[in-house]
Image (cartoon, rainbow, N blue to C red):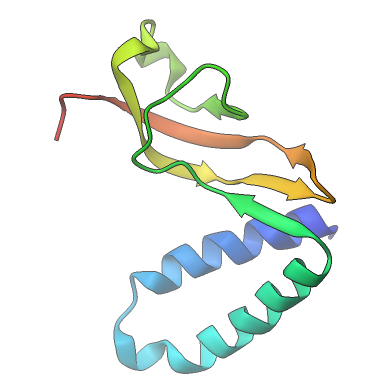
Length: 104
């Protein structure tokens, strides 16, 4: 496993844990903080775009691209994989799901 895989695994686990009941969070969050500290020390940054207006210039691919021929009125509904920046370079493009701006 390389540092990019570790960063993505950390990100997914943190997002999942954020949805879990409070009583079950203490110990896992402690471990996640240690991983986060290590990633920060290595110069790794994770970027998610949930809720932002989609722009074709973002460093992401669209998982549901077939449903969005015209992305002018799309916003990012969910980041499936974050953008991973390592030593100030993008080393992994993110993956997102879009929705139309007027959808709730």
